[in-house]
Image 1 (cartoon, rainbow, N blue to C red):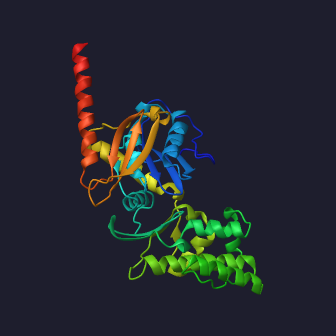
Image 2 (cartoon, rainbow, N blue to C red):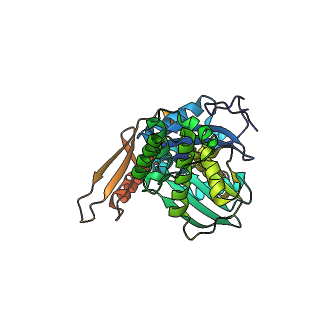
Length: 353
């Protein structure tokens, strides 16, 4: 295992001959970059706050890696997360997969035999069931704030506590109080009421963790059979109070992997390794120079038909390199024509000179 410091940077310099697979998971809260060695070890793990600027954070993460690695050391690239298409265009990804697949692949690699994955991120949560290593069922919550890390962050801020202390305080609870967890508004007012009644803070925080777990299981686990081994991943998995609440509700031990915060990126890197092997070892990686390229994203509403599609365009050094979002393919196809003409012009210049 390679040593990794608090910033996610490896403390050993890589040798020039080593090859790695880059996994990038771009979500609404965090942008995660992972470098995986050829034998599947996590060599680098970068967790950056997206802050509403996914493109900027992708380039920042790439610049961090560029200080220590060369282009030829990257054997392949995989992207996932809500901005996976954007990331794939910028980086030149070999594979683009949804979060369910990426998280399942990572958990299956790091915890062999896993049958249930609990994932809670900043603004969504997922339940993934695997049987014989294959995803058999899943559910996602992207609309209820009460079951996400952002709600825990909000309550920690209201109590003027660092979120890192939440789990430790929950573990000190003697009698967790019952908090209404079906709605973030009711949960907050219920917490305030319990404080006014004189309940101890650890009991209130432990009660909040149990309320979030009930919310998760009622919303995502309804009608599903959750079997061990059970893995808990995502940023909220660092909260020991949430882990204990899941173990209490499910009556089974819950495993939190070492790299629980970046499992989506780990899965994307593993999928990239498979894709490159199928392609005969060739990668589409554009290189670390993309970290300093002038890359911008823009959009417009196409008014050519009643669909009113929102078309996304990525421009690199004043040249459009990707478009998507148009249902009819008009704008995407027009870009393909431009790129074909550019390739023909380049070939003609080579022949002339």
